[in-house]
Structures are given as C-alpha cells and as structure tokens.
Length: 497
Image (cartoon, rainbow, N blue to C red; front, side):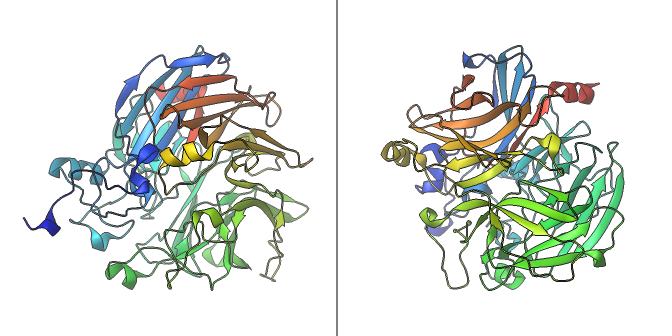
C-alpha cells in the first residue's frame, strides 16, 4: 500500500483531537456516581445530552470538532442518586465503519468526498430530544434516529410514521408548553444545495397538523429557529452552500459577508409557502435562539448575535476568517412587525454586553413572554487560571468559564463560576415543581475540570446562584458536547407504560 493510502490508526495531533478534546469513545454505564452535596428529592428525571465523538480516526485530517459520531449520555436522577449510561447512535455511518474497521465518511456534509455511498450519512450528533415517548437523536442534515429512552439502544430512523416528506430535520425542534405541539422544519429539505424548507407541526399524538413548503432567498444554514403563539421565525446564518464547490471537494459551507441576515416570518397555522416574509438586517451571525413572543402586535425575538463569523473554520471565498479570540456574541432583541410590508429591520437592541451563547429559558414559557434567560458565559473578570486551562483544553470548540442569568425585566445579570480550572457546557433548566414561578428551580450542566481531566455535573439552585447545590463526579472525561435536554420522570413513565 502506498504511503498516501495508509489508513490512519490514531487521531492526528491537532487541537480538536487533543487533551480534553481527545475523543472519549466510551460506551457503558456506571451507577451511583459520587455526589458532593445534596440532590433534592424533587429532581427526578433524566438529563440526556449528545456529543460529537469520533469512534475512528477521520479520513479528513483537519476535520471540524463537531463532525464526530453522536454519542449519547443519560444521567438518571432518582432519590438523590445519579446513574450514568452512554451509547453511540447506531447510524448507517457508524455500522458500516465498524464493519470495515476504518472511517468511510468524508468532509462535513459533503457526500462527494466519501469513500462509499451512504443512503443516509448523518452522524446524529447535535441534539437529543424527547417527544411522544420517543427519544430522538438529531442532526440537521437528515431525519432523526430514534433511541430507547431507558437502554439507549438505537431503534432506527424516524419519519413520524411516514408523515415527514423532508430529507432533513432540525436539531432544534420546539415543544409548545401549552398546546403540547411539536414544531420543526428541515432546510435543504430536497437535498444538498436546494433552497427548500419544509415546516411542520405535530399534535401530541404524533399526527401532522401543518406542513408547508417554503423557498429560502439563499441556500444558507438555518441551525435554530423560534416559535411564538402565532408565528415561526427562521434566522438564516450567512454560511451558504454551493453544490459545484462541493463536487470539487470543497466545503459545504462558506461565510458570505455580502448578503444580509435574513429572518423569515411565517404564520404558524394554516399558512401557504407564499405567506412567508423575509425580513432583512445587516450581515451578522445569529446564534441559538433564546425565545420569541408576541406583544402589542409585534414579535420580540431574543438571541445571541455576533458581528463576525462564529464558525471561523469555514472562511469566506477569500479565505478570510476571524481568530477565535475575536468572536463574541451578545444577547440581542429584534422587534418585528409581522404585518409590515417594510422588510428592513431596525437594528437589534443589545440586552446585555456580556459574551454569551447556548441560551436556555424556563421552557414552560417557550413562545410566551419570559423574564429569565440562562447562558454559557465567557466572563473575563472571573479568576480562571488560563495557562492551566489552555494547556489542557484542546481546540476548535467554544470557550465559556461561567453560567450567566439575566433578568430581562430588571436587567440584573448574575454569574455562577464553577472553579478556576474549569469550563462549562450548555445548561438545562429544571423547574422546582410544576407550579413554581418562572425561573424557580435548578440548573444542571457538565463542567470540564482541567486539573483532574475528568467531567463533573453541577447542580445549582436558582435561589442561591453563587455556589453549587451538588457536584456529581464522573469517572471519565466527556468531550465537548452540543445540546441536551431534561426529561422529567413523569414523562418517562408515560413513555414506559
């Protein structure tokens, strides 16, 4: 075999595969994790999260960090104890690579660079959501994979019993807390490079109630979206796809600074594709959505916004990209009049000057006016020992050393700092009870400990935001994840019975 054809048997010495970012590659379970502190008895349920975790060295040496296989963690909380389980999603890619003993997938979302042809080439590595008794591992380039909520065994691709015609499915579906509707979409819904968007709504029994085909003004990434009582909003990230570039072996995405930031606004029920309005704002990077709601005939849409290309590993056509240190996002609010024929938006209001991302709210208030938002926070005033952290961190992923809470009514910003050799991952909110006031409950999130090189779970009471109620110690290191969700034990019981 010629040297150029040698199949790599180890991960390259690149930041995205080194130190804490070394692929974890663990499947198994550990019961009765160590707990420092006290877990309240009302915290009963499972925290599911997923991380891109390559099970084999990639065919593409400089692969982006989030192109790894979906590896799902489940942390089950009961009676003050925590049990841990983790399994890879058995995607078509994973199964075929296990049989061949080598990586077969090529570049991120570029089928023209694969070693073989896949029917569905997704890694199912971006989010893990629960609806109608089903646990769904999602990545926005394909349909989700259904997994068993108890065992994490992969059941197979899920198309809502044949009701979903889209080839793709968002990694960020929304569950209306009042109507219990499950709302989603797929972009590039008819295949790579197509401008088609498929929007749909599903009733609590799993039946489609709305399905609308839309056409995007540009073929751009739509990573997240937002829902109000009467509208859905689609913010287009100015990374665009070009099929000819892909066929030539190039990247699926390229930063495009000469197009506006588009926000599509569509009536949520009974709409036609022609009913969408594409509002425009100056070129910018829209992050994960926080929430949207209606008030006085206007839509209030909150999300972190960056002025530069947050996905810096995909530069513009000239190869220009910011350094990671130049990238920052601030919570911003667009106010949109859905009845207006003037599609030029007023500049977004900056709600906080803090550098934040991965926003979460008390999801009992999703699509309704909310008062509290929680974030991963890059706090340059915190006493993080950066030389220690940076030496063991690895690279290619976002860096946040604190969790923030913003009161949108008073604009008070509170911070939780996990330790001076620690970074945080995305948080989830757990209500104290079903009848608790908004924002009253607990935050739960993974923490990377760069002294022990192990992972921790921190549980923080929102009534005492400065210190942890409990720290749960893991006996292993979990790579940087993307998204996860808390599923209450009562909902899981319904799925079992």
